[in-house]
Image 1 (cartoon, rainbow over the protein chains, first blue to last red):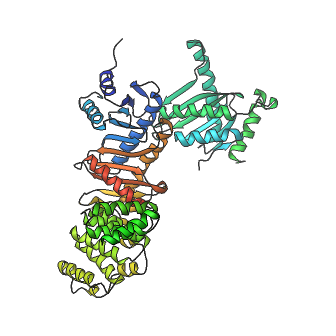
Image 2: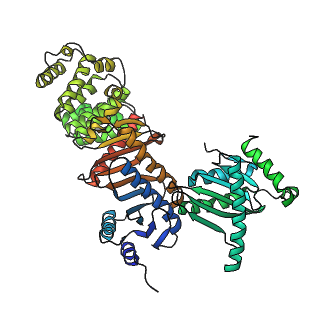
Image 3: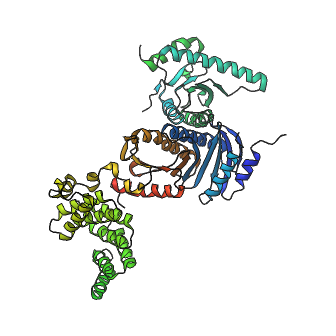
Length: 118
Length: 157
Length: 281
């Protein structure tokens, strides 16, 4: 059985302190392509909602004249969602509130620039 | 406020929540026989009539196909067109199974529709009252029932 | 002076809800104990958040400490509770003068002159600023401008300044945007000018949908309420947060601006928005 082409990227992300879930999601469908999430995180729910949020932000940014969105971070009382996207795929990370978002961001952008999402 | 036309009041709240949350364009809740319970977004009587007839037929075929291939009926169906997508799902209640047919565009996604359909099933199951013995639709009364329902849904246009 | 401070301290110790904290903070300020005075003023404001005189003392303390932005915000607050407060108008003029914004300084000082025509020091400051601006002989040198008349007659300072400029000083030199949207996505304050045209409403309407999306997502994700969204684009960094009364605060800055600074702009704009909407401190 072949490993998913995203397994390495997701493993690198989940290794970051405070990261509880890492997923590759289809932006248009909001469906999980691959995921590495802690027990208790519902990957399907997270995929549908985070892809939709990223898509909305991307379209709104473009429509408002800000160009293509590169990185999104949503902060909530009990955690964060970070997302980067390319070619209809969105890489999503869920973190605890205290996670080092700078490191997570760097890892995600590294994955994006390294062509991990195509 | 989202407009939902219903023939059975208990179906209104779950339908409204689904349409609002999933942001779908069209949605119709029907009995497996084709009898309409609630609808959102259909402008014409003929549209909903055709949609219900087709949905009931598709469900019957898919169930049979599922039984043949997988030993059990398929419970959901999705078709993605270039701009619009269709999702058909089954919701079990104490009144028996109901079908939800919905059409959505880029404002929703399959993932979102599946997510909110899951919630819809739970809400519908809770909202459905005990079946009344004389309200089970009979095939021979299907057309009369359908016309009465359509009148309720669209007025006497 | 020391006797006064001891007397006021005792009065405050006997009755922590007393208004003696205003006098005590002022006495400490005059003695140069800015840090202690600031603590006294802030503690007093926790009990009496709507006292213009207390905000005035705090504003002067911030000005003494060189924190002009906070001083500006506090004087702005004073005008909310005491419209036409000459000291606050003068203070706002002072801040803008020190920031090199002479035209705005002139407007505030002119309003202060209208509110207290006997304040010769203010008149002297106004004349100096006008001289710097080269408007000493302008027709409005003698007659107070409309803003001054409005302030003197009791209109809200923010109203006279215009909601559109509410966040101008927070953006500063940034070529960015700050918009406060109501629950329907309509601009309540701030603006966004592109090629001389205000496109705030169009941009706001687009970005408002992101807030709605976040609202929906949070209902299912078990992460609690969302507190901010920051997204980086090719050209800008955009940040947003839910504000009071179901409003949405949006700010943006060029991509060259550090993300942390954009977040700081967002926080400050939110505080300002809270005051603008009458949410208190």
